[in-house]
Image 1 (cartoon, rainbow, N blue to C red):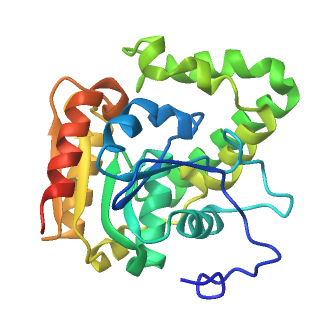
Image 2: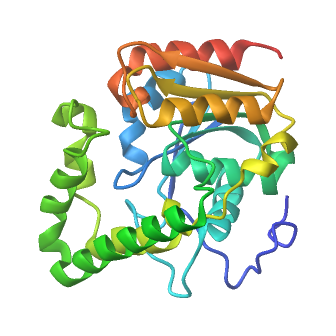
Length: 268
């Protein structure tokens, strides 16, 4: 698919940094907020024995800078589609929301879709506004504190209810610390859940196989995952992983990779 087909001019196209390893059919791995493509290192190495694995850095994360002209989730999804091309797309949390937009806007590129702890959008307008305001407040604190504030912000973020049970190794604290204050702040303001238009009414348009993954102990996102799979319909499968919370792929990487391989090997 050309840049023009994706609705983006070559001059103003947002480009994501991407790392590739392995050969074979392509699979694109997309990280969550405060992570980077390197967060997938263990899983990418496993998959690279049979797949061409593309790990991207979303805007403001890793080696992808904040675009000078600004961005939003649609522009990010367009950049992701260009970076990944025709492939299986696997997205965790923020990455899952970006992959979902790719699948809806460029369905011909997405052979299969895997959503891990991903939210199709906050439906209630008041709740969405409050989340947007909270994200903007967090962003302002990062901007004011600069890069010196990043370690404290990362520690506060990973000690929140979704991640408090995880070890530093599981949260990959080291790679998260490589992100900048301006990058994380921009991400919160432009592609945070509060800034996203809800996609629930469009989920039934997905016609590729979709695997919706959630941790059995993720009390917040489990009902969201169940509702997502139901809204997609017969093309969706729901996988509830025992002994895992929100970050299934990083809490239980071996279980997740086995689940992913089974889905990828299925000819459906």
